[in-house]
Length: 167
Image (cartoon, rainbow, N blue to C red; front, side):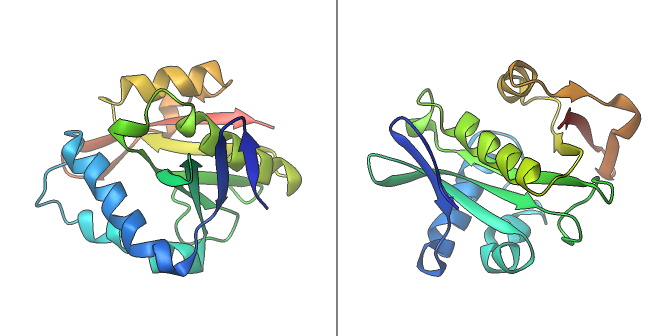
């Protein structure tokens, strides 16, 4: 299943793109100041083959180049950290600086929403870091609502905010 939003195309990642997607995700998270380059989470961000095998790894292209990626986690995926049995979740949303402002993030989230709706699920959840304020605004404009009762500490000192979209 692919999704097109004007010039942005969202599609399933191919195995020959996994290394590129892993590096893109690390670049966004570390280069954007979202995490330390020594964080143990870096190895999880780079392990795109596992993400693709245990969830759905999507990319967003603009002008034929990959500019972003997200991991869509259907029910039963070991990558789903918050979702209930009738919910999906998405994680590791990343858009390169040079690709920002073209709707890639929104298109990736919309593709996740479409997948959850097509599966007949009741909601879509996400976790986000408190300093990702631009992403928070996008989620809220798309109808996601904060769920502070589900906020969690992924490791000591690393707190995540949560949002949900009722489908």
